[in-house]
Amino acid sequence: MTLPKKSLAMVQTAPRVLEPMDVPLPEIDDDSGLLRVEACGICGSDYEQFEGVLKTPMPVIPGHEPLGVVAAIGDRAAKRWGVDVGDRVAVETMLSCRHCGPCLGGSYHLCDSRRIYSYIPLSDAPGLWGSYAQYMYLDPHCVVHRVDATLDASTAVIFNPLGAGFRWAVEIPRTGPGDTVLILGPGQRGLASVLACREAGASKIIVTGLEADARKLELAREFGAHACIDVENEDARARVRELTDGRGADVVVDVSSYSVEPVADSIDYVRMGGIVVLAGVKGFKEIPRFISDKV
Image 1: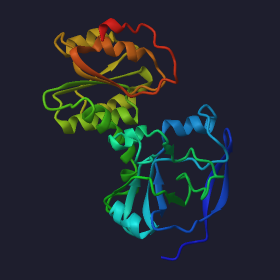
Image 2 (image 1 turned 135 degrees about the vertical axis):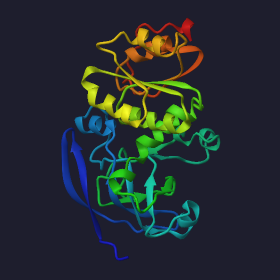
Image 3 (image 1 turned 90 degrees about the vertical axis):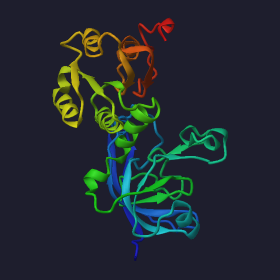
């Protein structure tokens, strides 16, 4: 495969400013590679980065949920990742050191010196650290997963929220057959959590949202939710108790973004001895009504 000398990239140079630029493609070594980007998922943090709410070094290439085809790869990288030129892969967000305590313990996303695609400035060679571009650099420390080449790109690119749904709603709380799961927030990761819980065999899946989320709540039902609650027009606590025969949910997963009320609410929704997963970003806000004695 003959590669171009440069990659077109959308570079953020200031809050709310994206500029097209040609960025040189680097020479790769035995441990790295290049990804030809097919599609990139849009994360809520992408919007925050664009608006300037999330402080990032600039200029920078945004995009950290890339799906693409391996365009070039070093010999050791090919063996390590188990992929070769022409293979379709999804790339994880984090770049970890692989030798600190969290990395060795399997929690590489908590690496002491982690870096994140789309937050590394253009000035750090080779510059192609984001997937709002034709090509992205595959760092030796990245994690790639082979993806079925027959899937449509618009479907396959949902790997990141789907993975989050399985991680937060199934893997962490160990959701299984017979469990009742309450999901707070019907965004893309909330809907992914519905799919994950359905596949895990949960006996009852409940989703909460706002009046403005009516369409998303409809999707939640289509994806397998047994009940949905409009928290602005219903008594959510009473409804949860009704749906769980007064017991509370076995698992509560908060995937609401920046809303702090669901954190305290989750303690009221969960059964005695149940599990609460707090996955929604809150912007370092204080949590009102949080009573530790309830935990």
